[in-house]
Length: 400
Image 1: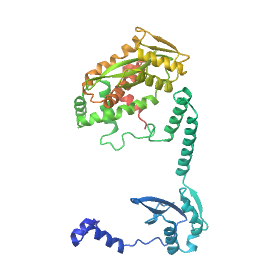
Image 2 (image 1 turned 30 degrees about the vertical axis):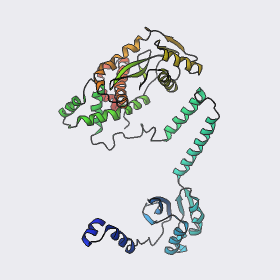
Image 3 (image 1 turned 180 degrees about the horizontal axis):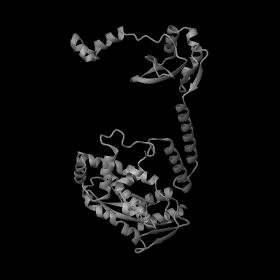
Image 4 (image 1 turned 135 degrees about the horizontal axis):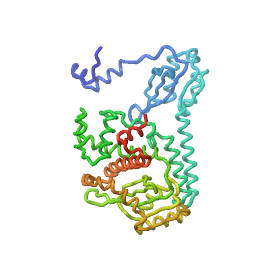
């Protein structure tokens, strides 16, 4: 039998689709199973706003037993009592459900030998809510939310939540290329070449065309904007140890005719610690970047900055908050030459900056450029730069 829509039936018979639906509802009554499985699952779902419907399935085969128009206790009890004898209902051994107390009140009345099994998902969800309530109560007792204790407690909870939540930290578990029209290798090659060399989107299109792949330049642009932050997060996960002598500085980036500031941090070996593109070069921006760096990478023994007042003010504030109390701070124009020279890699790509239309896309693009630069410096430090490949390095970071 071929499937046919209600609209087609209405067109053939000369009636409205509403009448077709009403006739079908009045004359088609799905027959329930003539037996009950030994293990059942109860749950509800939103059928028509705001109505909630009840569903019962076989826990072993996942086949549907029944779907009822509402989840009222009287409706559920009436269905099972009218369609199944007490002997048939007595064969049910387990019923899996959430913590809905309404179901628990009549389960043993309908199924005298059944045991109630609470769904594990709802147990974990309840534990998470209880832990969150305890965290909020503990944080409310801390007077200074910006103190080291308050910030540390909040960061520890965020880290714990990120491990439990795939939405916040799905980097090592998610397949970031799922659902894409092009294969993973093609995307990595495109963004890898773009981040590594001073090429335009159309240059990447030409390179891919030579390899038998036809793609539009706007697609390459979307890949760059999407995967830049992802590769940064993956790089942070694979980041190795660094020295305790840090250099902090900013590079100027033009975004749609306005200067923005790329805050960067490297260690004494020149290896990249972190970076972030911010709209302003002031105390708030410097404090935000330094505090995040100290929270994620620990304390340095020595911190070298330039003599910019906003940066000095942020460092002094962090020293008072015990973030840098045991660190030696040196501010000199010439002691920061190491990171000044490291800016050159970013400045070589500044020819692209005219295409930066907003800070979001600029940050995403620069994230990919910085990651490739960091990987290349690490490889050079290991004296193996001859075989360096940006594409291979990105592939190695992507989880299998």
